[in-house]
Image (cartoon, rainbow, N blue to C red; front, side, top):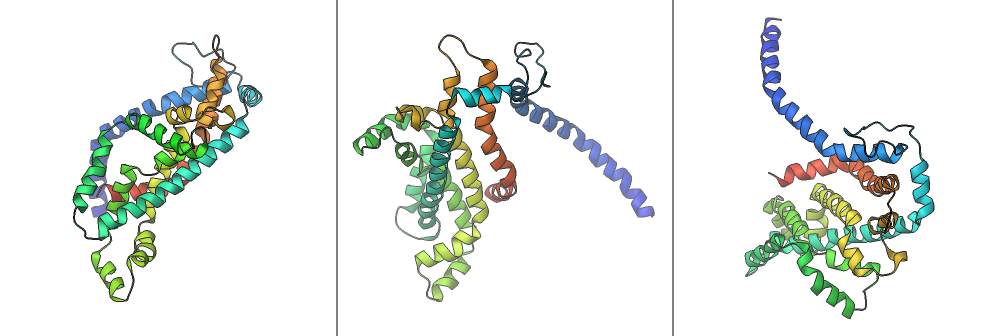
Length: 282
């Protein structure tokens, strides 16, 4: 009982020392979430508090009227299917390409391996927009301009995915790989039966990152796609913004509709995401 009594003041002191950090993190979290909460208030409210200052977070006369108006104004179902097609194929292709490219860099020995890896990392320093012209010329010559596949292909080989998967494969002990080779396993069997199953948290992390990015990307699809029926949700929502007048309530409702799917995916898969991030920063 005495030991417990001695521990309680120490625990309180630790809690008091952590209190400033907790308050700071709480303030930063609120600052990050505030725009989304405000958008929710506008989307569900009657629109009267749009220009109020200070802004009101709780909607007045909450309802679904603006979401129904968005559904009537633009073909949300078609845009959603296009986003699902583009994001799903981009995510699956990125996982395959990143894993296949990272495995030889992590587990095979060949001349120039580090040079290749550093060249891939160097591309992280360049903005993605710098490749737009060359990528557009390439897909145009392949006959893939104004197609959803033309949006997907240039996004499959990303330096971040290769770096993350290389780190995942390097964490696998070489003794396990050597034992598999002694049992007669080839490179493909080592990759498929050993490295991939042991790297599932990293694959989940990369998949979530890629899904969120490909769902929200706007500039590249708007450059490639000319037919409105092929637009993803991130581009199609701009139809709610008129040339001379814009309904802020409908734009807010469209933004909530566009964000909701990836937000739900992240909330459902955050356990795998955190496991992968914990391993990535070791």
